[in-house]
Every structure is written in C-alpha cells, then in structure tokens.
Length: 97
Image 1: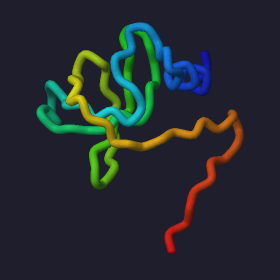
Image 2: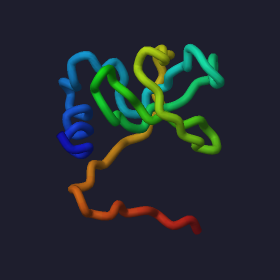
Image 3: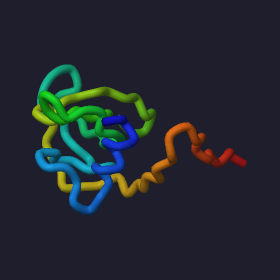
Image 4: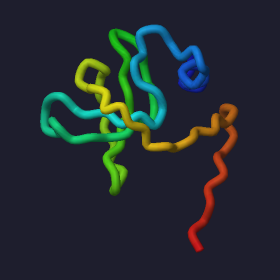
C-alpha cells in the first residue's frame, strides 16, 4: 500500500481498524525525552507492527515519529483540515503577505 492509499483510508469516516488517532488530534507523549508534552498528529505513516504517526509540536512545528503505544489521547483536536493531493501533484501553498 502506498502512503497516499494509507492516508486516504485513514481519512475516511470509517478510519482503519486498530488506528486510534486521526489527523489533527492532540495527543500527550507518555515516555521518553518529550514525556508529558502535547503534540498534534499530522500523518499516519505505517500500520505494522503497530500504527506509527508523525506528530508536530506547536508553535515551531518540530516533528517526531512515534508509535501509537507511546501516545495518549487528550480529547482535543488542532482543527486543521487535510486536502489529499493525487500522487505527483504539488500542493497549493499560500504565500504570506
């Protein structure tokens, strides 16, 4: 399965069985260097051996990859929306004024 196919399935209303977190969910890191910090889910990158996510820390958007077992839900969402672009198509990025 390609990354595009994985994220396309992840974003459906049904989601993917065994995957706890959705795009823009705010999670708390349970262990390691960033233990106790909150971050936002921005991508699901694999399912095996367990779901693995890319998360970002506001406000600087530093990213980290962590497995689902090292995260816990906060019940919050960052409120972002994701627009899936077909493979090979460049995303539209707004320029700051």
